Image 1 (tube, helix red, strand yellow):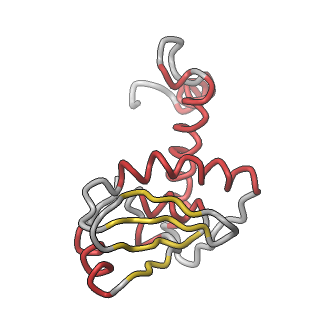
Image 2 (cartoon, rainbow, N blue to C red; image 1 turned 90 degrees about the horizontal axis):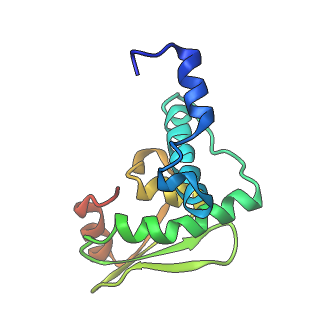
Image 3 (tube, helix red, strand yellow; image 1 turned 120 degrees about the vertical axis):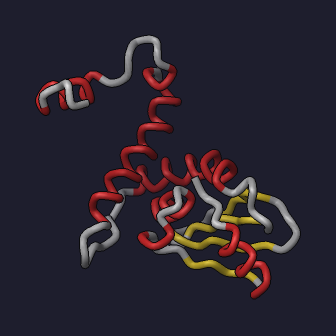
Length: 144
């Protein structure tokens, strides 16, 4: 990174991954880059005092929700309890991990994605479940 000028880095970013890289193509590119760019963009935004959640369009929320299925399964596979994600902005519920005891994470899709990526202090997600399951989930520290 230090061997390139800032304009050169911007150009490399614009060009995308090399021709042979799997994320250069269609759905994989869309799924991985949407989430990566969203999470890191929000990292920059939310580190500042007084940050507010962005208002995302329906299409972006839907794409983030769809991505949460894969991401959530990877993020919570070691959870001591079952994990369910539930949309706060409309209908939608998905099982991310089956287990004894269960927590339900409730939030907008973008917030649930951030939470799965370990941004728990900077995401707006409610955790529901019995006291023991919630404590076990919080103690586990799982996330990408």
